[in-house]
Length: 399
Image 1 (tube, rainbow, N blue to C red):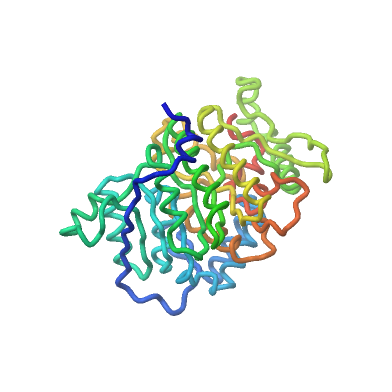
Image 2 (cartoon, rainbow, N blue to C red):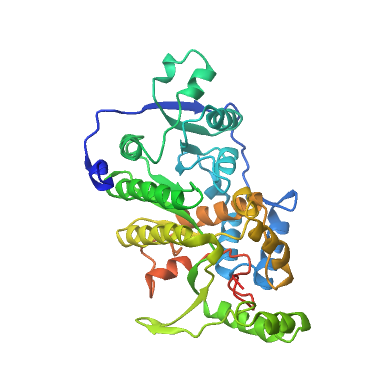
């Protein structure tokens, strides 16, 4: 057997070939930020009004609202013709592949070597103004037809991590990459795939001369530093809901199991008092928590070494991987009863999170930029949070 570290440092004779497909559509001349929400696309004044509603209700933090509005007010940020986005898990349910294609971005796609995956990704790229670049096991020109190209495309993050890293390091020299870690698997496999993505992100940050920025989607079901305003809102909601007969009954019957107060005293440290929220969900298991902690660790290290890191909390989203768990499916049905929860469709979550990402990589004053001073490195995850209500609800999400 070979250790993971040894495998990543060893020289490799095997190399991936490079596939490339350019979209057949013309790039739209007047690009504007659009958010998919409740079955329609909203933009302009309608979008700004909806963002204000979310902020006022407490579903998102003000910093997330500001990031979305700044993106809407800067349409030049949507010109992605010279930007390269590396998607680790390009076909992921929460990945931004579809949106990036619609905006004409250059996507470097990493996903499993399954023909049906590449048929979907490549056909979507063709029907866009963007482009897709992908690893292949043979030269694209040697493929007799599309079916052979699909069958020769893709890779395995588990078994080919060093080869993927090598291919990405040498790809498009001098071009800045934004690398998003979007692959998700259940159980211990999530930790393993997160380790693979972490190693790739580390080496790209250290070895690519064109510069590398990182993108992560944090989960609201985690322990996070939060603004004092979120803490105060949760306390206010607790005072209101604790008087409701239904909540009083649940508290009486459930004891400490149900409806635990979502308000914790701040902790003092260098830089002042820090407020935090316990959003950990035991039902998601230790592997999920471990995988997310690895992402936080890499985000903090990469930012400390000069990389832009966009790592914002995404909302609770009704993806298939979540709703297949009956406990979560039931919980999602009841959560909107508690102010200020809202459960979002995947299309909405992906739309708002890509807008915040665009803000982070374009606005030099964003928290994602390492030149912006933080009192504590974990404040990186406290800004731009589209948590869906977890931080401001009266009760802990796991109760």
